[in-house]
Every structure is written in structure tokens, then in C-alpha cells.
Image (cartoon, rainbow, N blue to C red):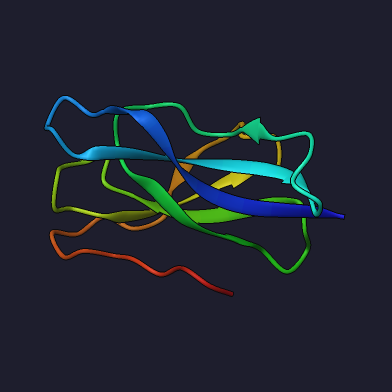
Length: 93
């Protein structure tokens, strides 16, 4: 059984905001694997119903411009789903 987590990393982004990344792990917390690795806040992950992809929000397009992205369960194929000046957060299926 795999779980998802958005975890604070010990470095600050260039804009001074603390950085969050998305991880996948076993339900007991073991075998943690980082799926995102950038200076933006990547968080609020949720599994898509088919279980092979993860949706999450990120501000990698600007400090206050959160957008929704989707990626494969191994972190590859990160694709932006939304693009507008409003903050798109809290993705869920």
C-alpha cells in the first residue's frame, strides 16, 4: 500500500518561502521517494482514481500563482492542467 505526502524540505526557495515537495511512500512511512524537486511549493497531492497518477498544486509559475499539475506515480511526466492568474489549489478527483 502506497501513501502520499507533501513534506517540508530543509531549504528555502529563492523567494524566501519555505519549500514543500511531494513524496510517495509505503503506508508505514518507509521507502520514501521524492517525486518533485524544485524551488517551488509543491503540495496537496491526491491520487487519480485509476491509481497510476497524482495531481498536485504548485506555485512554480509565480509566488502567488498556484496551478494544478498531474504526474505519473514515479514523478515523471509532470504536466500543467490549469493556466490562469487566479490561485488554483486543493485538487481532488
